[in-house]
Amino acid sequence: MAETGRNRYWTIAIVSLIVVIIVTVFIIRSRYRPSRPIEIILPPQQEIQGNIDISGAVTNPGIYRFSGGDTIGNKLTGA
Image (tube, rainbow, N blue to C red; front, top):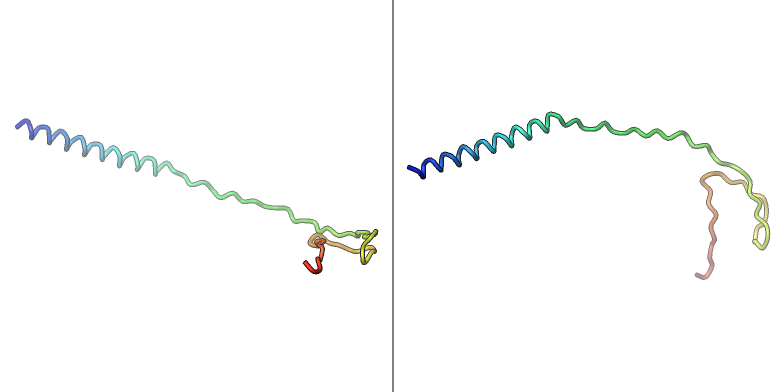
């Protein structure tokens, strides 16, 4: 008879714990508000243009036009 009382006690304790866990999860999920996505707006870029004077010990000295997307690179021969 004492064994039946213990089993009943543990059954009530486990069921109560499960109910508490379920209620806690429900409360947490009901209060959760997903954050809104951040919108980043970049201002339009101004196109950079200009002239560059290439002089000195170079093969083709002179004044050259350039814009923002241009690059300067070396072309290696025999490497």
